[in-house]
Length: 118
Image 1 (cartoon, rainbow, N blue to C red):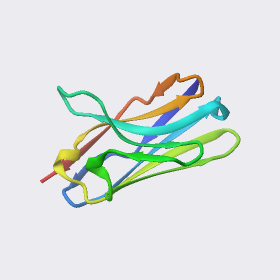
Image 2: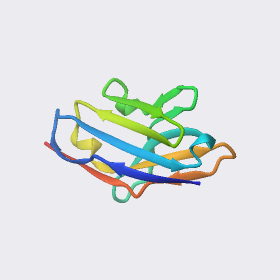
Image 3: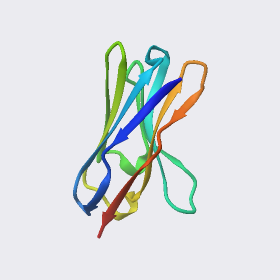
Image 4: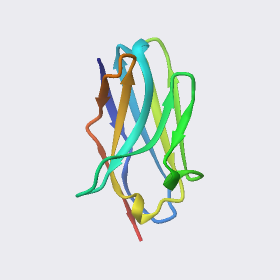
C-alpha cells in the first residue's frame, strides 16, 4: 500500500491554469501507474490522465492538448503532476489522484476541488 498526499486545485477563471500534485509514499517500488480521475456531482468518475512506470501516457479526449501529466520518483517517493492549461468550466470537478499497484490494487487520494468560472 501507499499513502497519497494531494495538493493544488482551487478556483480559476476560464482560460487559466492550475497544477495538481500527488505524492505517494510507502511501497512505491510496487507502483505500476499513477494518474488522475475526476468526478462531477451526480456523474460517474472518469479518467483524466494516467502515466505508467515506463512512461506510457493516456489522456481523456476532452483534455488532450490542454493537460499534461508527468511524474518523478526517488527511492522513497513517487509524485505525479497534472498541469492543466486552457481550463474550461466543464473541467470543474473533484480530481482524485490514484495509484495502481502491480497486482491491480488501486489507492485513491482524498480528492481536490477544481472550479473553473466562466
